[in-house]
Image (cartoon, rainbow, N blue to C red; front, side, top):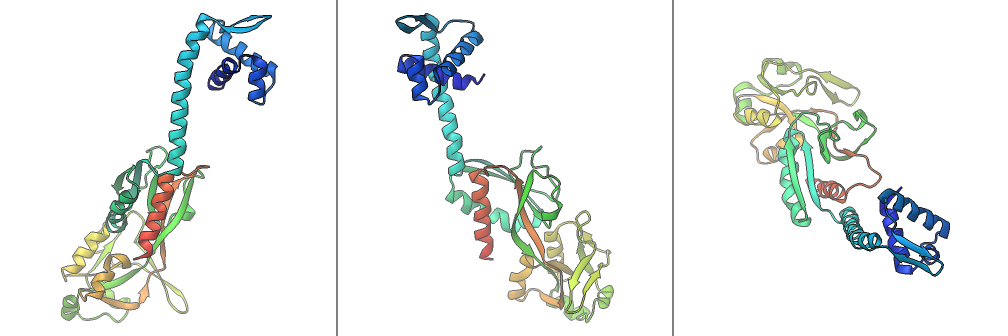
Length: 298
């Protein structure tokens, strides 16, 4: 028995003064209404109505149940309306996981603007390269690189929000001391900082005009953070392969120079991954839309 429905029917019977009138009001049949009230009385173990040839009246227990049941229905209606409102208006706590560099450089700076736009949302951002379990760990959203076709669960969906390419850079000071490499083979004679995170970064694909070239950088200087790689490059002591969004401003102001410009990696899409539901929470939809807008300006 649906107790909430039963309480609503009970209230309607009282309001309309009988089973038949309540049934008409609810587009139901008198036997259905009567059966539901009988089931409710059996569940409670008391009679809610006194029945006679002149009609029905509430018992003492029925009077008490009407008072307390009205409070329950009002509270349930209020909760239901609050939940529906959250579907319409972003609200509540938004828990996000993001890969380290993109989270630091693009996600975190965009969050204050999102919160100004949606003040009813609080945000928690975990910066980590580990692959979180959105369902088990109660994350609303994860930002991942190149995972659209690798979703581990059919209950997850992904939306592309950005893409990155990697290219070789060094400071002018480094190149003055060590010379400009003319080919991939020349890189073997230079100190390269290489970012590796798990299996990511060990081999890179470079699309040329006639073919795609696979290349594995020397691993004599390895870090697991792109920001660490960038900082090592900026010392002037090494060159490296790094994501475009991390270094473009530094290319523009001359702090670093592109090396072997014909070699830049295949595009690596970045996705917002979220739990697939029939109704996406407004806070998740709003954050993805906000990120799409913010990233389109980069």
